[in-house]
Length: 309
Image (cartoon, rainbow, N blue to C red; front, side, top):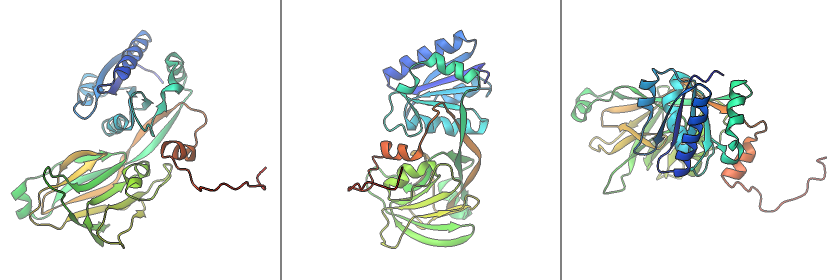
């Protein structure tokens, strides 16, 4: 890898993240790279400035934070194919990141990157677009243009400051009506996102090496409403059934993307873009990550396996 232009994003409000960012920036500049640094968080978005200043020519993105910071980087950088090195500096769960202990020797990391001693993991992403079907109703509330990317999940659920709104939604897959749901909303997730909001909503865990789409209802008002997993080539459409409720939102990786008004639907499909993550660890176990990060303890009673040598 040639590191000519690099960006460093650190978790907003993290003094440790800022110190790491300044240190890594100095080291990369000493190696001849042009580097931009900035905070990323709920109220900070450095990526438009990064992309404009670098003319979208970025060789490396270093993300110093938790999974939220990593997801934000993936949404902006996947279309450009920028490799992301994510280190859990100031984050919490850190499911998508390297641990800070693994990356203390940053000079060794730059040497490994420049000598191509690393792997690239490509992770499936989803893309969504809000489509106005009923021009009369849709024009009352406005139009939505453009598409949205996510690495974890697209979520359709209400957001209201003064009440808990029940969503009434119809699920369609490749033009065929599957079911109607009444509850808190619907999650449409990638395998990466299956260990996030989806698993918290009692959805399936899907191995991150697969290409698949998991659809999980959130607190449905029916005992028969179940999560399903479908092939990635199919298009998921979610229709709001209420004709007068304007509280419904499309969320991408936990961030509000846009409103969904009566007379509109959300189409969700596997994106042609993939998030690209740099992997430095030589030994990695997906199942060990589940046990450590999600505290998956399995059976409460342990039996010895006398047949395993």
